[in-house]
View 1: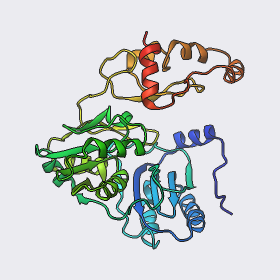
View 2: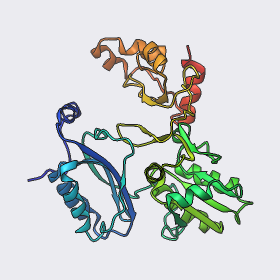
View 3: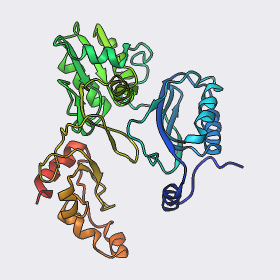
View 4: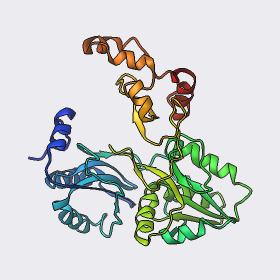
Length: 346
């Protein structure tokens, strides 16, 4: 009998992944579609994916599915057939990772959610199916070069700071709700202009374009397949990318390089850097950008305090975690960066 949840210790799972001798392929996909029996869909899909030794993180809701996965190369054809045989997943557009060592996930999670993308907006406040026009990578590439178009990044600020399209507007936002409100307010007097939206794989642009049309924007367009598909098509056509830097991804890889240019800076010393890491202090686990020099100096921690903490005996760390507070009260990415700027720079 197949269990419907993974209960194996993560250390064991990571060790198993490291010892695998076969290749895995990292993919992502999403679809907005009404799923009538979410519980049955979720349970059966978990069983099917487990039987194929798939790993990854999938969200299932009545409004659809959102997935980032690692599939064994020799099971890819069976996986694609599985999608084709499902009434909700047939003809699913798949995005394949640009840089991929197959070690993107170590366990399988298929989670039932209220929404596949939390937007913080009231239910039924707008029609999520009335979306903007989908642009191919080549169409987006050509239109984004025109002065009269508005190119808007629909990702969070920690994503855009390591890579973005040339001349794009990148909102200083930590949540989708904050972002969509900031975008619509910023461009409220330019509703007749051609809008080009982009995000990692396309799912955030689906909702963003629908909301922008709902509030009166006339010419809303979105990059089909997101930055992931753009990078693949640009490389295939052998033309210079208008996307500069890295593309943040939500798996163990953290990001994949699209362009050789480095647009980010180390949060500790300010030097050029574009690799996100999590602070090695598990009581902190702050996500931030760190260069190699600072990584060595701080032992991959965000501060001297965290560096000192991880040098304590494990049992002392466990006891002290209840007493020490490393991340303060503002857990937004902007708040975390402010604390780094004021307290963690040596």
